[in-house]
Length: 122
Image (tube, rainbow, N blue to C red; front, side, top):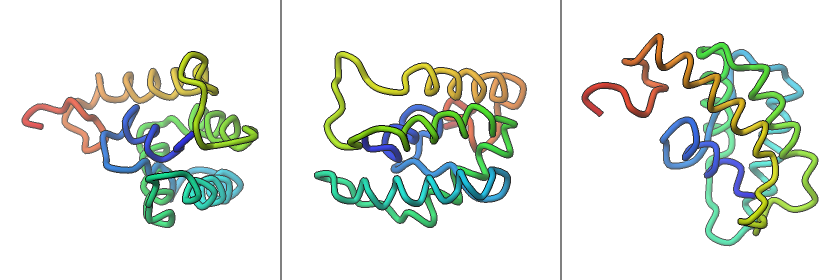
């Protein structure tokens, strides 16, 4: 499913996902690292998992979106394959949408935040 790529595109607008670090449960941090490492087997995926997951956690805690983030990571962790998802029925859409909505609320209130892809001047 290219977890880190999708996460980056959907909420961070960074080259590879990264939403973990200071604020999510250690279980989620471990799940992120495990998922990231599994994604390294997918074609075209190269990510610094430690950095990506630390950034992901920081984003989740900074934006107050640890719950939706934890739900999204847990959903991704339950997939049988992270590579080649069905584009007509992508997995974890509900969780991804909830995370995006949460970050959107944060960004509306904090439009100049580093974590807001549409911040003024970007």
